Image 1 (tube, rainbow, N blue to C red):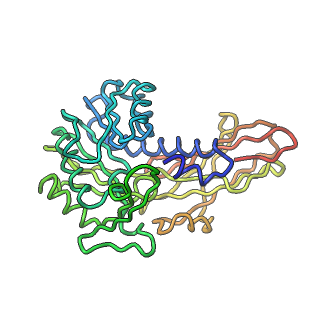
Image 2: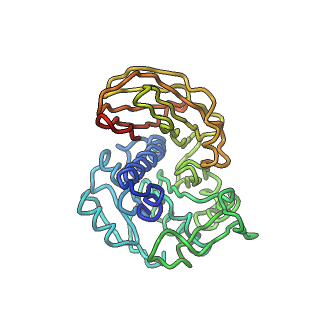
Image 3: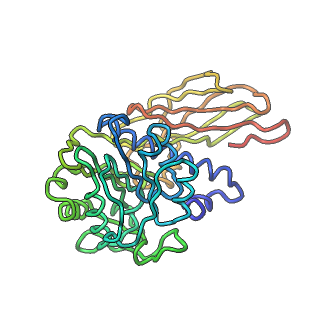
Length: 342
């Protein structure tokens, strides 16, 4: 995913691509943490499963809150599982292409399948739902992410059953007939959950549009006896520098609040970890909407005037939304004679 999904967007800038990868890990954890808090906090979780873990984008954040032996990392790539087991000390399990051959046993308080069901055709979508739900502990939850029908590319049809599937993905090795790109309606997911997990699970199902990666809807399926009433999974805001001026000392950026009806309320500037200014962002930067089609809120613009800064100064801008979640943008001035680089 990093090599084919992230790195191409940063030609010649592998460091920036890696930063974006880690940033997506933090954003994933912020959503995951809200589910954990609803279920009683990390202290109430005996075991969790990161299904489709890759090289541990989520796992690397969980080890700061749970003991390694409480975490299971599972992926179809053996080298990714082995790397996580060696690096983080977590339990590793190599997945399989057929759910009926999946060897894992026991129960898990949270099973998180991020960016897995968004790639599955209908038969596997339903089969993996049933298999993972069978591992979900009473009082726990199964969380999956999908591409909603609104994100289907031009020319992609959605069938009468509510799913469209295209046989391609970022993977160079997985069979595209079993791991491609799928686009589903809410009605499809609810019907699939009812069939695979039971009517009670479908009735208690919670949906959070675009809660992950700005393009995937999160569905949380309650385990036996789990009450998801009141659960809110909100995505953190987005922000970045857009105009930098080491000569003028004026720094401008944009922000976007991805949760419908919510708003960004403040922007704060730190220089070398010293807080120096606060501003109230104003509506603007409409041109960025081409990167966020269908965004539920208009973007905002923030600006700070610092005057000239010494070479190597580190700037951090933090945007806070009325959800309580934050986003950060970073910049460091280069040695004298060079331009500033975000």
